[in-house]
Length: 381
Image (cartoon, rainbow, N blue to C red):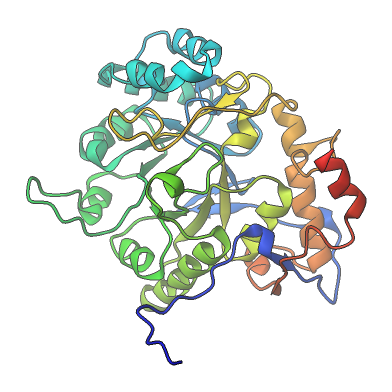
């Protein structure tokens, strides 16, 4: 019997459903150039540390900057609310599970102190490290001038879902073109998952776009709102917008896949899907000295009325140096991320991240289970 279709749906893919095809030529991994750019700024590592209080504080941003990466400080977190944020971080790491959401809401109810914004940025910049900060759209217009004046290098505007147009009866929404013109530093905007939204945001003058809605380990947006697109498809759609905008304007806007990356294999797949870099949260939260002390929670977790995240225990897996460069003491791809990326590029026969975009990908739902009988038995045991 014929049944009319109410909606057309397409299949969307996440990291576990795709695989990369080796190249016909292999390259020495040491020859791989893994650098990436945001506007005129070049970074040695195509990996950003997420703007989560459990991931990035001033000491972490400095350590990671010296290793060649970029860490993003959350200007709406405890670092900008408390003179001594360590006390709050200790309390959050010691709280019992039933009380954590209410404690987060209480701690994050303290008003943001604009004075601390300048102090935190200056503390990072005084070491010679680059500084990136993140705010939600509601605070972007007020905090961007403060951040730029303090010497910030990159300004991020992040929310659960970001579009270039916002409809409201109560106020005039943030206009990205005006924000980009008002500060002399690159503006990065996220998060989005669709071709149309990404293209329109790019036309507003941003330097890079963050891709991903709800895939983070500590995020519950997909459960609470039912919203999201698996990261491989989301990245490919936004990368298509980047190529269209490059052809239209001659300007290249970097794509950063944000969330859902559990190991080095996922990172490699994100780059092959069209990303220029990735943003990691929980992996870095597992490093020794991370502010979360073995825990992680998302930026929307302390929302006063509708929390979209939870505190998760991630443990401590190794030093930051070990997570990035090894030597790895585990076989799950959570350590020596840079070594794994270089090896993947060598196997695929590419030399740059731009070349990674051309690597063939296949739909492969059995890629992690095929022939893995004993590994799967161990995991179940």
